[in-house]
Image (cartoon, helix red, strand yellow):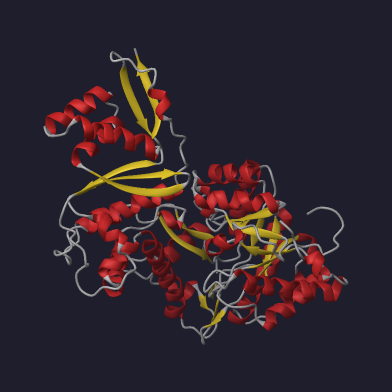
Length: 265
Length: 287
C-alpha cells in the first residue's frame, strides 16, 4: 500500500474527529486506523472526537463561569456543544477559545427570558482579558499641579482599564456565580449598569459608575479633551454638578486608572 | 543543571492550583519546576508573575502543548515568536513539546494527535524542528505521546521513529514512561523493547504520570499516582540514565503540593537504589 501523505492523512483524521453539527466520517476510515486496546474503530475515533468537545467545553466553562452558573449544567453543556460544533478553534491557546461566544449567545433562541446572557459573557471575556493584562503605571494627582485654565488636557486610561456598560446588571449577576440557585437568578438584573474594570497593585477591581461619569471616562478613552468630555456630559446630564465632577476626579486618581496626562498649552 | 550528578533531579509541574502554596516560597523537596508554555505566553498577569517568582528560586523547564511539530501545513506564524519571547524572558534549562500535531490552524483540535510513522512525516518533522531550533537558537526536546489508534501506513515502529527524529534533527527526547506504557498496552507491544531501544544519550528528560484504565483501553489522564508497572520501567531507564531530569505530571484531580512531593520522592528513592545514597537534606531545596 502506498503510504498516505501526512497532509492527506491529517485532512481525513480531522474530518473524522472535528466537532460538527453534521459529522462526515470518511468512507475509508476503516482502512486508515487500527483501533487501540480492544476498542472498535468508531469508538477509537470517538476517543479523539469526544476529547475535543470535553476540552473546549472546559475552556468555555472556565472563562464563562457565570454563564454556566445561570444556565445550569445541562443547558450550558448543550450551548457549549453547539457553539463548538459551529465555531472551530483558530487559536493555539485553549484558554483563548470563546471570543465569539458572547455574540453567539445574543443570537441563541432557547433563552428569551435571559436576555442578558450575551452581555454577561462579554463582561466575563473582558474580565479574562484584564486578568492577563500588564499592570500599568498610574500617574499621581500631583501631575495636575502645573495645570492652567487655558491648558488643553487629555487623559490616557491605563492599559489595564476597561469600561463596560449594559442595559442589564451583569456585575450583580456575576458576583453571585457559584452560589446555589434554582430557576431564575436571585438578583434584580433588569437595570442598566456601567462599570470600570481596572487593575491596581496587580489586583482586579470593579467599580460601578453613573451614566455621566461613564460618559466622561468613555470620551477620555476615545481621545477627547477633558473640556470636551465634561461639556458633553453636562449636555447629556444637566444635573451633573461640580461636586460630582470633583468626586469623579478623586476616583480617577484614587483608583490609578490614569496612565498619562497630556497637557497642551 | 550542569556538572557531575550527585543527586536525582526530580521536578514537578507548576500548576495554578499550587500558586497560593508556592507564592509563600516554602521549603520544598523538588529540584525544579516545569511550566506549560502556553499558560504564560499570552499573559502579563498573575501567571507570569508567579512563574518569575518560581524562576528566582528554581530551574524551570518550559513544556508546550501547541507547537504542532508534526503539522503538514507548517507551524503557526504567531506561535514561535511568542514562545521565543517567553524563552528569552524565563531562560529555561529545557524547552520541550510533543511529537504530535494538534489540528489545523483554522480548526485546532487542541489534542496531542497521532500520525503514521512514515518517511513523509519524518521529513515534515525535520523541517519544522529545524525552524524551531533556528528561531529559538537552542535544541528542543520532543515527547512521545499516548495514542488510542495506530496506522497500517506506518513504515517504522514508534521507538525507531523517535530515534530517527532525534538523530536527524539534533533534538532530544522527552521520554514519557507513562505514555510508553499506555501505548504498549493499547498497541500490544512489550514496553521493555521500547525502553531498551532508545539510546540513553538521546534522552533529555523523563516524564512520569498516572493513566486511567477505561476497560477497553488505557487513557492518559495525568489524574492518578504513577502505577507500579510504570515505576518498574522508570527504574530500568534511570539505571542507565542517572543524569536525566525527571518530572512528575499531575493535571487532573491534582492533590495538595505535599502529596505531589511524595510522588517525586518515590522517583528519588528509585534513583538512589541505582546510584547511591542521598539523604533527605540533599533532596531539599531551601528557597
